View 1 (tube, rainbow, N blue to C red):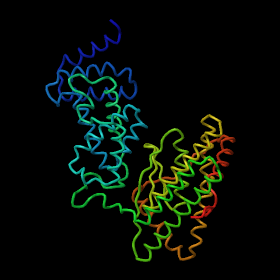
View 2 (spheres, one colour):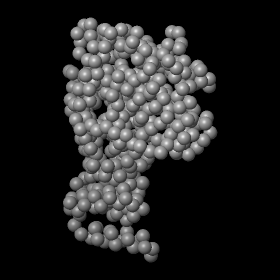
View 3 (cartoon, rainbow, N blue to C red):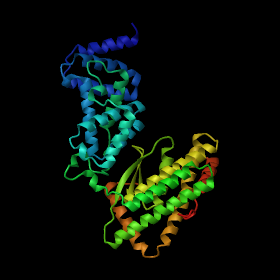
View 4 (cartoon, rainbow, N blue to C red):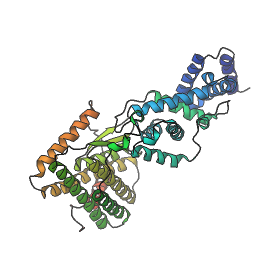
Length: 417
């Protein structure tokens, strides 16, 4: 008999041969969680025992598979009340756990969503995230499909479930950027907190998307720089017009926030690019290293525009980096960092020129807007810290990134509308 077979036999004798009270089962799950995270291959004997217990369970209270699924679903529901959103949760499990665990928790999120009694009153942004997750996961999101009872769960299913459970147990509190499910009611839809875009703003965003799509698709640097510059100019002027209109009618600034999920590789460098785009557009950007995301805080129109421009610039930067035909992490980190620095300089110049054309009347309006944004940041992040990471950067990557940024953006107004 092989050593692994003996381990499974001995484990079953130790556990199955004695009382399997709920506390014993929960202790076994705790041990299996630790092994699943730290030593997946060594978790197999424990998983065999869990399946054995599941096969002989008399009810959910002593069925490990049911206990794990119920615990995960309860913790997902609790995460919503502490600021997490569907896309955030899947993203952090992917980052901190594994691809398999991310696929598994996607299905778990969809199962929990179907159980939510107020799901019909969910904010549009929440519904959009669930729809995206559903498209990725496909069909068949039932509790029994997460971790089959009766001893029928595979080792992979157990590992994904246990890794997810372990992470959910230590999940920190996030910031509430939209009402959680407990605050959704049919009489007062949660989505009403997010104003719908005006017809003018919708047209502007459509034009900006068109310009950025052209910038991303063209192979000619001169065209890309002109399209991107015009998009920035349109966004700045529209934002200023909305701020002046609100000031004229005595309205307070409606400040909100969204999270932008940053994918590997080079997440910190990508976040730096997002930061400089946000800063040039009067939006604050806060990096969260645990979940690899950036929270954008500002006026809704500004936040949406920053997200659009960042996405386009990242496409342009990636294309230019690929065309440099130089591989290596050091080169690419330096490239993206230099690209971000130079883009920040150019976008700031373009914004300053647009603001200057409005004259001194704009100054107090922008000051009030900045105060409103800062106050909202302080409420969401009372313990926010700032800092930077110094590192040696590849000289070739820095030079190539700077040149690519020079080709990506020109001063505002380079293209006639």
